[in-house]
Image 1 (cartoon, one colour):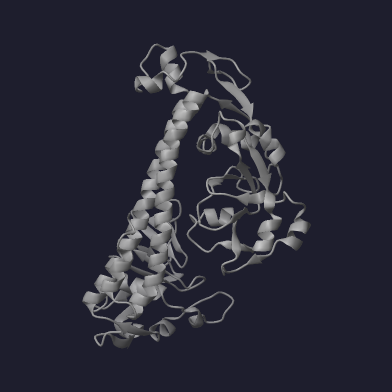
Image 2 (tube, one colour):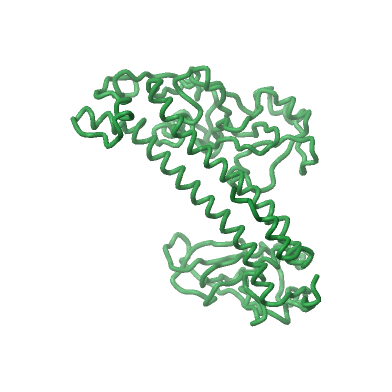
Length: 423
């Protein structure tokens, strides 16, 4: 730690302002975000804090949030006004590196007073160094967000192309009506120029129908027996020590595979032999949020299927449809409607893998599937690269944040760690 860093308290360098009551802020398209203790809860057309700043949880959730622009805070949270010697973004990083659980008042609902917050000690570097620290951490976050946006764009492009070619049959419609397809000749020639009747309605002439059971294999979390058997033989653990496997759950997928995973012992992984998951395998939710799906990520560790999912694999049993093709098929309204049609349940919607296996889908000819698979593989490969880079960037950020904030790690050393992460 540099001698330029000085010891002080949050009460000496900042002021917590109470949020205010507000109505009609949910599901509105207001100009400003509305924050509560847990984060953004809506929008409104007025602000409470006139610039960027930190939101501090007061009731229910004692966490911290940051807004890049003016915002409103309701009465379950504070907003932090810092003095001229404190950089707002640095203060956010400093606060999220703190364990403030000891400030909980101890009531049934977690809460924190301004007085207890003001008593927290702070090691404060110079304003220039604060800004440099905040810049390094913000650049890492911005790179992560940019990668997410690129992936989202790539995904939407691929979905739109898949829908046009294999659901709406736009090239076939254009050729049947004597219109140009708008595609290069070598691609346009892969599509027929007429339709024929099928069990699913009109499909391009020469294309076929197949059951899911003819395309791939499927299994689920209870493949090795009943839930009672699973409870006895599958042991979950909280931390990875070097000999565990990841239990892939939809709860973790919804966090973009960036947070704490659920782990199981090696013996449990071996017990779930039929439920082993490999990078690129597809998983469809069959209980609750029916139809939600994901591609298994490459996390560098053995993986097994978690509850409430059906694993689809071994697409090589039918050369006509590939894993990437089927991945984008899962996103279409047509297939989602088929899943809803086989789902039931008064308390929780669900379907079983037997019903899934019986669903029909359109199978294009090999040459068209081969071309589109190559195209989709390139897109998915780029997405995987960016996801892997984001996990590296997040690991770096998590590692350097507390050390930068405490002065244990200096800025030049941090820049060396970050170099090369975009390769």
